[in-house]
Amino acid sequence: MSRLAVDLARALDPVQLASGIGMDPDPWQAEVLRTDHPRLLLNCCRQSGKSTTSAVKATHVAVYEPGSLTLLLSPSLRQSQEVFRKVTAVYRSLGRPVPSESENALSLTLENGSRIVSLPGTEGTIRSFSAVRLLVVDEASRVPDETIAAVRPMLAVSGGQLVALSTPWGRRGWWFEAWENGGAVWKRVRVPASECPRISPTFLAEERAALGEWFYRQEYDCAFAETSAQLFTEEHLRAMYDARVRPLFPTGA
Ligand SMILES: Nc1ncnc2c1ncn2[C@@H]1O[C@H](COP(=O)(O)OP(=O)(O)O)[C@@H](O)[C@H]1O
Ligand SMILES: [Mg+2]
Image (cartoon, rainbow, N blue to C red; front, top):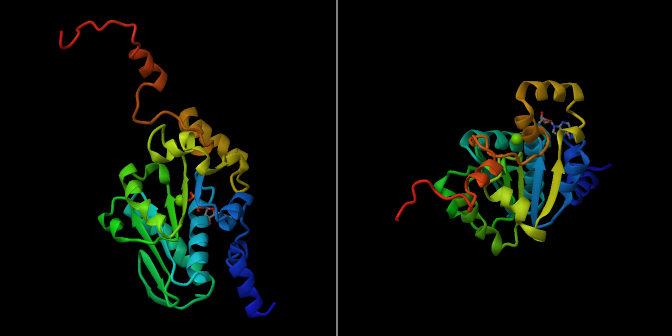
């Protein structure tokens, strides 16, 4: 194929772009790369390839949609740096298909006017962005509700796409709420470890033994277990507040 033909194929199909870095996307990864559904929730196990998929999708948008802004949001600075390293790795391994104007630890600006910016969810400057074409939230269950509330309006005018990928982290927070009660505006994709071709049953058996059932189900089986900080289960707590039980020391009496 000529260079032009390759470029055209990649422009039309992000999965072709992934092949360009030697990645053969799993079916769910191909779906995430290709879809333009405006609201996506990915409940994926640890090590399934969330960050890698985000990096490829971000690079595709930046390279083939001139002037676009992609924001990658993570719970901490360390995680923002890690996701962004994946973006630069993808971009470089493709041979910098559009030259860059500037490249640093957390952002890439291309000569076609596109930008990819990676930010920790705690970052105050987050509010200064607008007209976001693609907002990727990595480890979304750990990104605070306030941060999401601050960034969602940035998608409004631009009709941008929100892709939130995570491993569950208890039964609380915006990502859990969206998954459980968010209704039909969201498209949901679930990827337990048993469906990841790179994670062996032997490894999973070891993890199950080492972590115990509770952690195992959360980390590898997409389960919304009660929060790790909670000593009692939700059921226990509800029982404690049984309305029929009279308080021993009524207050305000
Ligand atoms: N489709 C794929 N083919 C081969 N390796 C992959 C694929 N998807 C992810 N990986 C590899 O799996 C590992 C975990 O990926 P990562 O994106 O960090 O996962 P997560 O963010 O879900 O924990 C990385 O080494 C990554 O390169
Ligand atoms: Mg990751």
